[in-house]
Amino acid sequence: MQSSRTLTGWGRTAPTTASVLTDPTPESIAEAVRTAGPRGVIARGLGRAYGDAAQNAGGLVVDMTGLDRIHRVDVDDALVTVDAGVSLETLMRRLLPLGLWVPVSPGTRLVTVGGAIASDIHGKNHHADGTFGQHVVSMDLLTGSSEVRTLTPDGQDAELFWATVGGMGLTGIVLRATVRFKHAETAYFVVDTERTTDLDDLLDRLARTDHRYPYSVAWIDTVSTGATMGRSVLTRGWPARLADLPRKLRRDPLRFSPRKVVPYTPAVFPGGLLNRATVGAFNEVWYRKAPRDRRAEIQHITPFFHPLDMVADWNVIYGPRGFLQYQFVVPHGAEDTMRRALERISSSGHVSFLSVLKRFGEANAAPLSFPAPGWTLALDIPVGGDLGAMLDELDELVVEAGGRVYLTKDSRVTADTLQRMYPRLDEWRKTRAAADPHGVFSSDLSRRLAL
Image 1: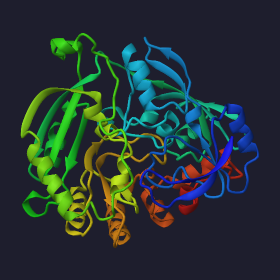
Image 2 (image 1 turned 90 degrees about the horizontal axis):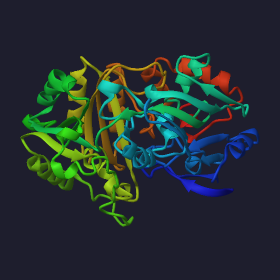
Image 3 (image 1 turned 30 degrees about the vertical axis):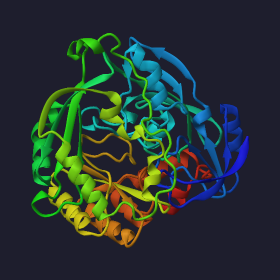
Image 4 (image 1 turned 180 degrees about the horizontal axis):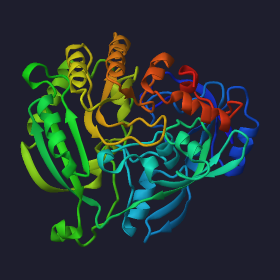
């Protein structure tokens, strides 16, 4: 069934209207691709891309969430075959009781498998385990000719496999994938938490000791200036074994039944609610209430991985104009660039309510995959004022350092800037053109960036 809908990304900016195909089957998706109009087709999952990646003004959007079967689970080999519309939350609920844990999870579990591949999502364990795409054993891709091709990372179509990983849905529509999971004894993590005094202290601790932890992330204060600029709360951990749990938790160690603390958030928040005064006060409280140095705390998956998922529709707190998430990575050795970027942010009139810094490990073979060895900072900034000008300045700092921004979070980078950030972009374009010579797969993002 198709109906007209106005869509935005999670940042709630730049709405556009498209025809949306709901409750799809592989056959109806293939027919939609065969009969696509001049504005083309793009797949959409749970709408957690922040910008315009899953919008297609005047064209067709395929709502993949109806394609959500789990086809096969091999517990011994930790291999799971699923439709692309299955969410990570569904997989956690269904597979954790079997002792299987997703190989990579971002800050939300409300992401589909197809979206995880298209965005090549990363999590707190990138420095140890890479991206989601590196755990995909095979995928079935519907191409622009309505042919379904089975791709593997090192098979005959490996080039198309890696162009699809991180390819923002523009090489075709993933229908099904087989993913290698991790074995898990419990649904808990052993967590160390510590406060750092400033940016230099944070980067030093991560550089010296992060190899000891498979999972790590830092909340960072981007409002404070001077001697405390970049102060943070660093949280790191590893999967808890059964023997790590207190006796009362051992009775049901794999229990996973997350609930929303705030089940409904009304869209009544005014613009300007998140300003330097309110965010500065929040940051002060958040930093002071964190332990200076707490070791081996047992935490369940939700508070460690997905605290924001406990609040439904939290994106509305940014007000009617929405917000931008700006995430960039710069290489190791470019710590001064990170410092200059933080100085520019903290001295501006703009504030980031949620700011996260992580250390990335090695990049993979995908030309448009975002993570690369170095430091990544993600900022959530309400829309307003001269925000675009400030982000343009940050773009230049990032490019000069050999870094790039994350397309899944982006809604405003220019085509010229993107070309400078992704040196393998032309290689990706060539592979995409071979798989979709008539440009069937298209989105607001692809038109904006001339992809």
